[in-house]
Length: 138
Image (cartoon, rainbow, N blue to C red):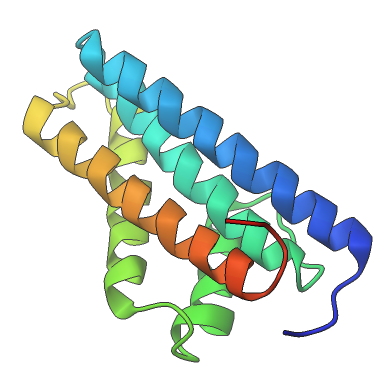
């Protein structure tokens, strides 16, 4: 375990809980057939998970691409998280952008279901890392 400021640990715990809240919202929206909004919440659950990890390094950015890029640089390229996780993150970002900004994008049930499933995998991987680092309990 590395030494991390308590303030950074608190922020990581807050962000991973926020991630879970967004994930739960994605599930509810999906169950109600609102696939566009479910894609958005699934993405934000991923985004807040990444921010939880990066807070341990004291890093944050207002730009989503900055968060993704820094996470990949610090945690994927170093082998802490898999390339598969990186692929899931890229897909979530792309689908969220289509869902939010493309007037002609049709969010499909199967695609949204995949986004939610992949978001869960990312959250679980981040939770596992935070447990390993002693930031959160099981």
